[in-house]
Structure formats: structure tokens, C-alpha cells
Length: 64
Length: 250
Image 1: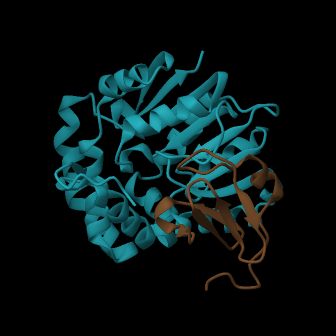
Image 2: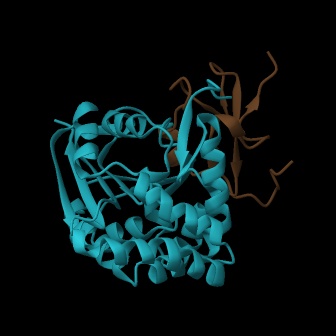
């Protein structure tokens, strides 16, 4: 949707330290969808204009 | 996605709203004011906010080997001041993407992009691991948070042992003789300036009201202590119109 191809990539230094705000578990970077996946929470956090949006209410629930 | 007990409430300025709604209402305020935020701060405080921020930065004691988490970083005044004074890497966090993109544009214009990472996050639920930062700052942000105790607890969690949390916020005027003038300024002048400059009186009405609802110096000091911070102190600025609060994780 709003993951335009022009969107800059996520800063790798930030990716190293980020955790899920809900579970504090690890995140994996889904390059194709430009999202950060929390498997434990079942949520995908969007990255917009290169900035991770780490808000639970903005995250996309993953299909179980 | 909030554990919304519908009978729990929060203050939104002088209004009482369901607790789960406050964040969205605050977001609307800052979405609305983001583009004019800096010029409005100058008008509203007659430029004095710059002096307060300077005091705040001196107290933060920037050093190259210190990392900073700047909460409610918004358009970046604290982050840029920290870097300008030789502080180390910064994570700039704000719940509002509109405010943060103004901050990123300013960072790019000033050549600071290499030292800053940007993050949209809720200060009550930060996506960062324990004991990560030497300094955590929050300037004019705590007032807008729904659960202030949770924010202070998160700050303590994220500080390294020996790290310091500092809050710059409007506080309680300590000079009784000035309160009439201060009230007139807050509730008569500010919304009108907001209407003229940002075309949004309601948002600035909220800002004025939220200042009055914020815990006073002694109450906020106790909240820091209750969250487990040590050597908690505060210092009044401009007679208590604002104050700098500080606590250490020891």
C-alpha cells in the first residue's frame, strides 16, 4: 500500500537494537514488504520513509 | 488494540476522555501543529523556550561516549543541541510521524543524519532493550502521555546503570503575584495566536489546559522516586513556569 519503491531502506544499525514493543521479542526484517515482523506477537510493523513505525495500533496482524 | 477499560478515563486538557482515546486526540493536535510547531513555540513562550532548552542541554551534559534516547523528540531541538555540543549517537523517538519528519528534514539540512536514528514509538511501550542508553531526555512531551508512570518506568528500564533521565516540562508557577497575568496569557492570548499563526485555536487551547493538568514539581518528583529512580531532583525555570526534573538509575 504505502510501501512505495522510493521508500529508503531501514537503517541497519537501528534494526540491530529494535525489539517488539509488545513482547520485547526479536524482530525480523521482511525486505519485500518493507515490514518488521514480530513472530511472537503475530504483528508486522510498517516502515514508512525509512522510519519504523513501532506502534501496535499501526501494525498489521499476521495470518495465523 | 488497547486494553481499554471503557470506564477508565484520562485528562485531555480540562476535558475527561476515555483512557484509550487520549493518544489519538493528542496525535490530532500534533498532526495539526507540526508544520508551525517551531514558530509557535517562539511566539507562545516569547522565545524563552530556547533559554530553557539551553539550560536543559547543559544539565544533560553531552559527551562523545554517551548515547542519548530523545523521547518526544519532535522537531529535534534537543537532539541537535546535544550533537552540536559534542554528544554521542542519538535515537530520536516520537509517537507522531508528522513531527518526526519535520525533525528529519531539519537533521538533513544540518548534516546530522549520520548520528541519528529515527523511530516512531509510544514512550509507554518502547521497542528497545533494557539498559541501552546513558541519557534519556524528554522535553515538553510527558504532559501529553496518557500513563506518565509507565513512561518513567520505561525510561528507568532503558537506562544503563549510572544513566540519567531528564524531563523538561511546564510546571507550576511559584510566584503568586504573577498568576493573573500568566492565566490571561495562557487562556486568552495563546489560543488567539494559535488561530492566527497555525489556524488552529483548539489545539493551542488544549496545550494551555494540559499545562495546568500536569503534576506539580513535588508530585512529579515522587513519581520519579516511585519508578525506582535515585537522587531525584528538580530545578525551576522562570519562577516555575517550567522545570527540569532529573533522576538516576543507580
